[in-house]
Image (tube, rainbow, N blue to C red; front, side, top):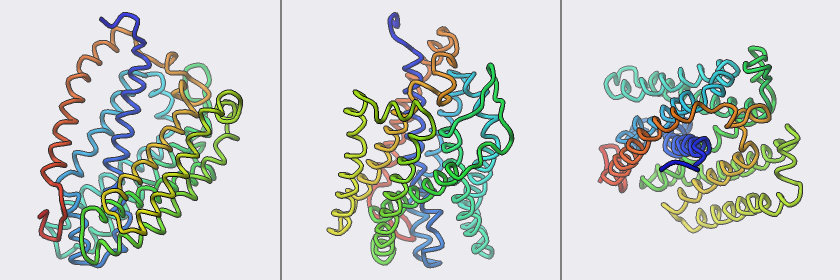
Length: 335
């Protein structure tokens, strides 16, 4: 049944889908944490948290799927990337732990709520920044000798990786702001709409800055973006980003709610497509291809059977939870 199908490519797309699902679904609640100090204590902060309370912990299912899938389907890439990115990955996990603990304890320990709010914001910023730094470090190139990481402990830290880290923080904050525009009313919605203007501008500038620097990191990046006939296809991505940016600010000015969030997601999708153009078919950019890093075909078939069952189930219960908790929210819950 699977004869003639390149399962390595299938698994590359499965993991890419899991990573993008995580970015979409966990990005907006990380963004709310990043923006938390901009909201007034009390009603506004409680409402912002209630808007994601029913779904936030399930969003991280996709992070587990992406990491576990990388380990199982591309063990060589896992063995190279993890040592290269230990520091930002550990920082990300610590940030997610602080954010999760703070999310629960701020309701149950109101006497120290101000401290839990700081932990919620700090954990969100650290997690988002670490994800961006890890992505930037991967894009700028990882030193590989034979089948192992050959770089140093601090190789992940560079101006480019920091730029990508700050860009991800800004973009997640944009998702958080547009989520609140879609989900809330009153003063919090007005505040989120105002923040969306500045964060939208910052995100567009960040996309332009990262996109301008990326082709100079690796010769392969330059070839894929600017050499004929590739440029005939790749040129459509920046054009679509410009078009999406125009419609974002147009809809923002017209007072749109849901469409604003969807356009922000569209910007993420376009940047994710640009990332794919830059690195595919490599999984360690410029060093190791997906075929070189892949596990045996028998293992891929075994895992694909499980994934073909579990992923639809995850999608179904995720869609159901978002459907049940649809609509506007206030400090007491959805209504």
